[in-house]
Image (cartoon, rainbow, N blue to C red):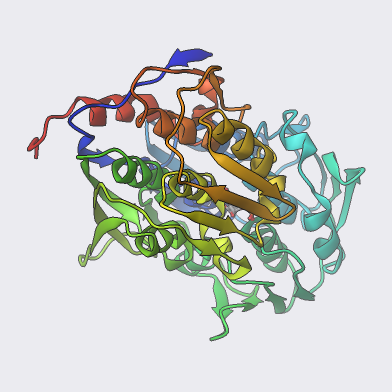
Length: 439
Ligand code: S3P
C-alpha cells in the first residue's frame, strides 16, 4: 500500500492521544492467561497483527479466547491443558510469539510445528533453541530458522547463562522453567524488559530477580490463577509521538496512560539527554497491572547529539530507528554502538535506517553494530518515495520524518504498521488537525 504522508503542519502537532496497548504485555497476557486456571480479562489489549497471531495460535492449542475490540477474555486451561494443534501454527511476523511459544511448547506432552512469514523466517531461532536444550528441550530448526519442530517432552530444571540480551529468549526460558519439577536459574547478559516476571507474579507465579537485575530464579511449584489486567499504553508506540512533537516546531502533545516500566524507558532518557522537553506525570492510584503507568507531555526542542554504547541498548532496542531520526536533526555527530541486535529485527534495521535517512540527504554511516549520524545538514526533499521495507517501525519512523518536510512525500508499504499500531494513521491525522490550545 502506497500512501501520501502529511507534510509539516505550520502550527505544529497538538492534542491528546491514548496510544494503543503494549504489544509485549498483550502477548504475555494471552499466554499466561492460557496456562492459568480460571478467567483472565485483558483490557486495552493491542488488536494488532502480531498479538492476534498469538491469540489465534493459542486458540489452535485448545484455549477458549473471546475478543471484543480491545477486551479479551481467556479461559485458562492450566499448564497441562493445552492440546496439540491440528496444523502448523502460523505466527506470521511475530518474533515475540515465536520465541515465547517455543519455550512453552517445549515442555508439553505433544509435538508442534511453527511457521511464519518471509521476514520471520529469516530471523534467528538458534538463540532460543540452544538455551532451551539446557532444560532437555528438543527443538529442531531449519538451519537455525523457521519452520521449527518442537518435540514436546518433560523438561528438567537448569542453570542458564544467556549469551544474547533478549527479553524474548529470557521469557521462553521462564516458560520452560515453569514446566520443570524444581527451581531454575537464568542469568541475563544484560537486564532486558521484565514484563514476564512482573505479570507472572500477578498471576501467582513464584519468580525472583536478584538485586543485580540479571539473575532470575523460577520456582515452578505455584498454581497460576487468571486475573484482570489493564494493559498500559505501549511506550514504543508513544515514542513516535515523542519524536514527532520534538522535531516539528511549535508542537505540544499529551500522551495518556503510557507504560512507565523503567526497562522500557531508554528512549525517554535518551531524548532528555539530547535536550528533549518531556514532563512525566506518574499515576498514583491503584491499577490492575503490575506495571507503572503515567502521562507524558512533550514539546518541540532543538537537540544535541548523543553517544550510545551497549549498556544503553536493551531499554531502547525498538526505538533506535527514532533515535537515529532525532540524531538526524541534532546539531552534531551522534554514534550508536553495541546495537548489532538491530540486524535481527523485522528487517536489518541498520541497513533500512541508512537507506531511508539517505533519502533526506542525511550523512549516515552504517557500522557492524550501529550507526554514525551527522545531523548538521538541512534535510533535502526526497526524490523517491519512503519505504517501510515491510517493517512497521521503519514505516512509522518515516511518517514522522515526513512531518518535518515542506511538501508531501509518498510511503510505500504503509500497511506494515498493522503489526503494532493499526490506528497509527488515525492518530497521525488527529495530531495534525488539532489547533493550538485545543486542550
Ligand atoms: C520483545 C523483546 C525485544 C523487542 C521486541 C519485543 C518482547 O526483542 O525488540 O519488539 O516482547 O520480549 P528481543 O528479545 O529480540 O530483543
